[in-house]
Amino acid sequence: MRNVTLKSSLYLLVIISAVAWFSLAYFCELDLSKVKDFFGLIPTVVTIDLLVVTVFVKWGWKIKIFRGWLVPFPNLNGSWVGFIHSDWKNPRTGERPPPIPVMLTVNQSFFHISGMMRTSEMESSSYSEGFLIDSDRQIKNVAYSYTSKPRLSLNERSIPHDGTAVFQIIEKPKQKLVGRYWTERLTKGEIILGYHSKKLLEELPEDLGEHPVTENENKR
Image (tube, rainbow, N blue to C red; front, side, top):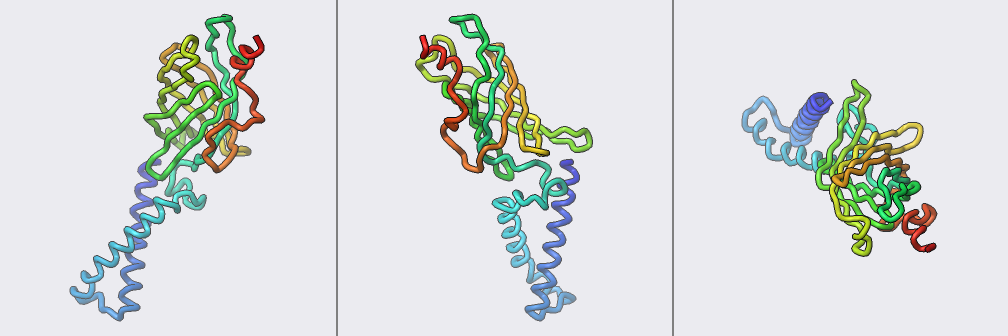
């Protein structure tokens, strides 16, 4: 897939350069058979190429018409909400928690992607990210390693730690991220998220409900 998109990018850039070259020659009434006229257009053509590339990298890559043949990865920008199903056991009770409400915000550009995952008890920020995409093998994943920082008041039962998450990207019939994670605390689990908003939210939507561990402790 990477080789295909690289070839497509080079072919498209050559076509854009050729169109710019001949268009400039036509409107400026230049004779491309003359060395001076031919090479004199190089600075202008390069400027046009750079402008096109800049616009594409900034906005154009998000347009669906470029997906697959030019842009191999989907646009995941926005907020995703759902639940964590964890095998972590509460040291106070020895029990696993019910599904935990969670939100993942994705900030993506053409060259970079980062994720911030939040529950009402912690924040996890990614520090190493990447797509794992192979259309021939029907693989469409995004993976990242992260550092999780629970609230300081929870250090007794939840300490800072690192981990890794791998999500399968589902686009049809509805956008979903279905993943698994594991941590250096030797905990693991599943995360199921649905697309919620284009905005990068900073708090979980209220309709997701409270963190089940916090909720149970507040009832005591």
